Image (cartoon, rainbow, N blue to C red):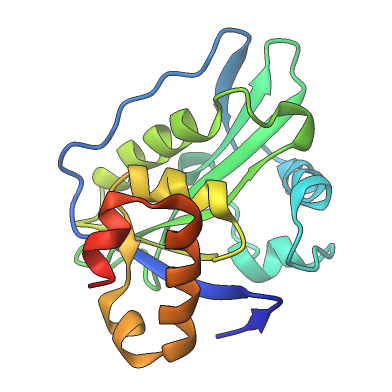
Length: 193
């Protein structure tokens, strides 16, 4: 686990896809899937919005590999009706895409700063969760405690702290207590008892 200025890396899990919240994109936006060359679009979005991770040109390959075929089914972009990229989310897998018992992964969620606070994150989560539900029994994601509003969205979607990580790492537990002091979220409260 890394810790920088109170920003602790954490893992969140969701055991199933029952009652996934349903949210539609606001007017003026649409979804599309990955197309050739979108590695640059993805990188540009993260360069504009990422406060904690050093986004470099090779990050996309490190995270998604060189076989881009699965991306057309699992990486989604939100764009304006004029085609301006506004956000991205990936419905990935935990370790092995060929293992049907493996949880799916919400991976690399981003909204460009010019499009934040416009109601994009929850529809993006709905879209990615619907894709994960087609192939996986549950879901996992990695994030950090400094991302307060992202954590609220994930909690609202039924993700909770990984119980094993919470029990084994005092730093993670302290990080979650800090999040709870800012959010006072009922789902998080039930896992911090």
